[in-house]
Length: 116
Image 1 (cartoon, rainbow, N blue to C red):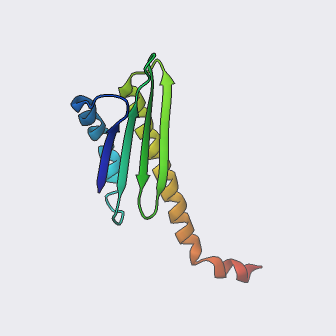
Image 2 (image 1 turned 90 degrees about the vertical axis):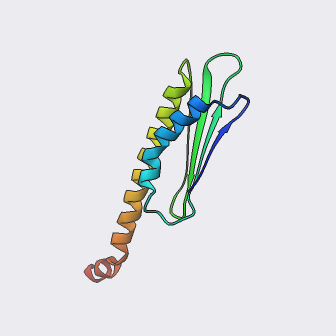
Image 3 (image 1 turned 135 degrees about the horizontal axis):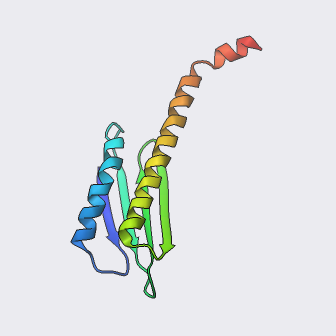
């Protein structure tokens, strides 16, 4: 699993990196049964004028290629990180359920043709 945390237009913060690492654990656990390679990219980008931070999370595997980003004025970086990771977790669950449904229906196409 390749995980990269990037800070754009700001200095790297070990505290923020450790917090993001802890939050990404549930994404990593979800993807633990996925075939490799797995790429997780998390990008922090602050606003220079006021608290209008942007966080982007990309997950790329053999089955998934998803992007989740969020920015909101007046929210701390930690809240934005939580929001992005929760959104990605929901998107991964939805994509997995679609993938499982497609696999289930794959063998049943012949049965539906016979019914017509």
